[in-house]
Image (cartoon, rainbow, N blue to C red):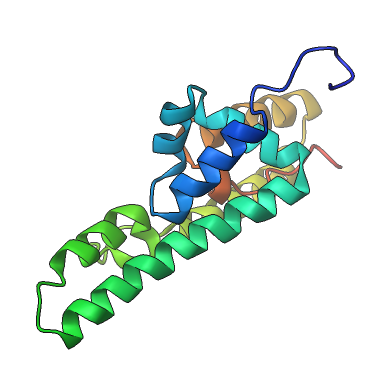
Length: 158
């Protein structure tokens, strides 16, 4: 039991279910709904437990590899490969989905926000203004950028 005395939300059975679902290609959101928790609970548990975080990454990789295998098999046997491609486009948009050329990738958004935050720290002379702007920037990042892609917004380290 954790130090605060509350039992963990994700017991061994729920963790096992989550990993099994990710292995067959479910998203973390679908796995969270299945076990009856929030997606943030899975993320927070992984943040506190490096072994579980590694197991999550591995299970997601297996799910992705299985989808790629189904596409390869369908291509070789002249069956319809579109279902596997559709799944990958939705499962991992950043890597597999086509997008307009004028749309920023997660990596580009990450770099943009990181540079903007650094510029604000360097250019705003008044500490309280700098701190207020950085606090608002962090709130925006939390609201619009997925947790996995969130850039590091610098502290007011002048």
